[in-house]
Image 1 (cartoon, helix red, strand yellow):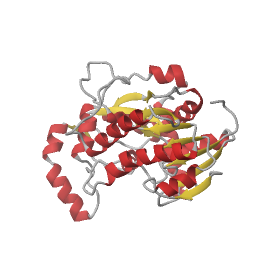
Image 2 (image 1 turned 90 degrees about the horizontal axis):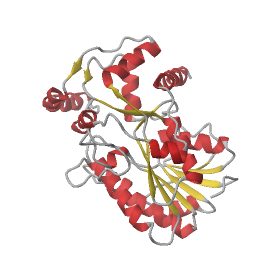
Image 3 (image 1 turned 30 degrees about the horizontal axis):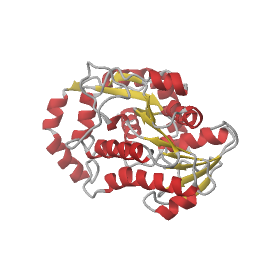
Length: 331
């Protein structure tokens, strides 16, 4: 697909990755049909054509994709609280199938599907972590399983006539323009405001949302059909990430780290505390297991080689995130 003037549809456009993708696309001169589900916040300063809709509604999708050369499918339901009503599976798996079918119906040439590193097994941690890891299966958390199944469905459907398919698996994307904010954005804000007194042990791979978004846009023109690309960043223990936040912001960060095995024992108390306050618990079994099993050496060499994936220093990411949050709070 030649890199020239295009009309591109973005689902989940008001989400963190979605709105940054829209920013980059419009800066490059592309026209963008931007779908949001409930709030336009995050898109209100970007010159896109907004569409309120639901990815589970085929008519909404066909209207959104009409006249578009490519689709970037960012819409997803991220959950660290299971899937009690089935909405995670419907959104992430059935939604991806409906997006594919609508692309084929409207003659879209290329589909970029935003998946997640959670779609595949993190363990064992002493073996290479790349695009060839086996998929999660029954017994995995609801979000992880939904992303694994959606990838497999799309790869199978891509054998038929339809758009070229490229799958991007980001790790934990953080940075500015986190308008809603995301689960990780909430945690970074709570750390800054002194609402988290102790840290869980463990860590994860964090990547700047702008680097992910640039790689997604590059995939429109460089991504190969039915290929998967790992858009990861760098692994940080939470205590090291907190130290970096303290260095960047000057705010005192917690120094005590509690073993995850102990925190798991406290989960019933945490859930009860959340119920009393009518608020979501600060951590869940899903979030603790992600930190416990986070792979320390994700290999993004394929994305760097083929999609020019770049990873800026985490100091820059955190500085820009907290500067952006401060500006938003002062508006």
